[in-house]
Amino acid sequence: MSIIIQSPDHRMAEIAEKVKHGERLSLEDGVYLYESDDLLTIGQLGNEVNLRKNGKHVYFVDNMSLYFTNVCEEHCAFCHFRRDEGEEGAYTLSPEQMFEYIDQHIHPDLREFHISQGHNPNVPFQYYVDSIRGLKQRYPNVTIKAHTAAEIEFFSRLSGLSYKEVLQTLMDAGLSTLPGGGAEILSDRYRKKMLLKDKASTEQWLEVHRTAHKLGMKTHATMLFGAVETLQERIEHMLHLRDLQDETGGFMVFIPNSLQPSSVNAGIKRRVSAYDNLKTIAIGRLMLDNIQHVKAYFINLGTQLTQLAFTFGASDAHGTIIKERISHAAGALSPEGMTRDELVWLIKGAGRVPVERDTFYNEIKVY
Image (cartoon, rainbow, N blue to C red; front, side, top):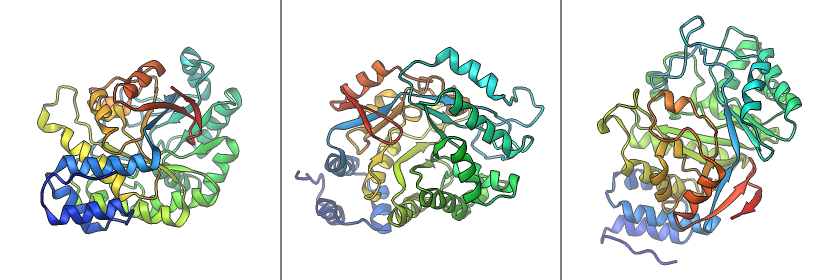
């Protein structure tokens, strides 16, 4: 596929040549792309790489988001989901209470539980183990994706166990994969300013995933952008992921999520621009040459921008979700979930081929 360079810019032409020949982009290349206003060329390059890797297939999973507790010891500056123990709206569900919620929404084709929750220090590590075990025993055919690397680090402190021991205990109970959250921006400067308390450091986040990969687990990787990070810190974040992927090969997908404002009534100046969202997806596709998929998360992007993202390098649309809470607690304007038919329409409407998958990107059905 030939690339049409939209301007005579020599540096962009050099990057386009690298992409054409499958050469790895540098930190300086990534920062240059972020500083460029040539969005169409950047998107075209991202699209070329994605077509090379995935063709026109766009993947989605039939999944359900679960939230066992919103009590959290962390005080991340961007979070509007967390509560303190005893605060109005705080909750911690037993497995039986969660079963009741699941049974209201589950159907025979559901393939994945995606668990997101607070770091609740008021219950023992065994509570989290029992929650996973209870889900697996009651719904044995549903894959459990749960506990970010930041949660694994928290569990290690809570229990006195090593990362490996924590992960192995959870895997024995039924855990199959880690979501990518807790990464935010992998920069100690950023983490000191935005995370405020004891949340996992850059090296701790990476070490948890390294440990999980060595145990044979495939995992996910996110980036939460649009706050106080620099453009260079965004690229350095991607390079941290790329380096670990070179080492372990354990990441399945990169998920760039834009920061949500504190209210659904927040004006346009409080939201990450469509321009920045699309550019970040394309640059993520270009920088992370060793990760198969980049996700366009419709919860953060909204449905129409998600469709555009499929021609900027994204090959995954996430899943049905049922009822998302964390981004919506922070002012997301998107739907809380989508049906399978709606996801198929979303993907076909962008001129792509919908592929229903399982958690590990095994194809279930091509539409």
